Length: 182
Ligand SMILES: CCCCCCCCCCCCCCCC(=O)SCCNC(=O)CCNC(=O)[C@H](O)C(C)(C)COP(=O)(O)OP(=O)(O)OC[C@H]1O[C@@H](n2cnc3c(N)ncnc32)[C@H](O)[C@@H]1OP(=O)(O)O
View 1 (cartoon, rainbow, N blue to C red):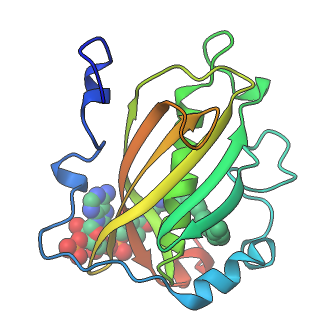
View 2: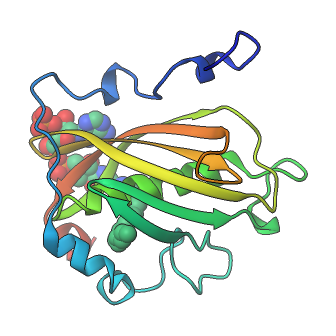
């Protein structure tokens, strides 16, 4: 339940705009078994250099994936001093990066390789340095190469208050997207 004293965006149930709302004939997401298997060796599949989830990246977010239920992915991270923007608070771009990571994890579960095409964020509450942030994302529909994914970041626990909501479109790309010379 929301109240009139909450931020206007908190009174909406989703961050999705018309651009990130799947069309009415979008397909229901189907999880790919091999993507789930790859999750167990994600360091080997992707390397450990990811700003979002690389465990040894010095100034990275070091997001820890904690599981999934269908295309709904779960993760958490702790906001470090190097993630600060305003004094004592997480930088908004850092929080958008964290949302990108969990939204991308939900896309990963569909199989193939996806990249972020569009990312929309609503910031509902400041996030103090030292907070444990709980991330969730789910696919709301698939239309051709486009996967529509929404998520949120909660403070302090999986049922804690929502600090950030995000809605996105991830686009399926061939492997050459990552390997071709530019
Ligand atoms: C426990 C679990 C463990 C799991 C373990 C592994 C987990 C692993 C997680 C990794 C998590 C990383 C999460 C970070 C993910 C990044 O940060 S990815 C990096 C940021 N993104 C990029 O660099 C993308 C840059 N953009 C591009 O390369 C190109 O623009 C794209 C997106 C590939 C599209 O180009 P294209 O292939 O030529 O496709 P195009 O025909 O233009 O568009 C295809 C369709 O998408 C639509 N589209 C394209 N762009 C957009 C847009 N911006 N907005 C809306 N629609 C768009 C088009 O309209 C078109 O729609 P249809 O006509 O088919 O209806």
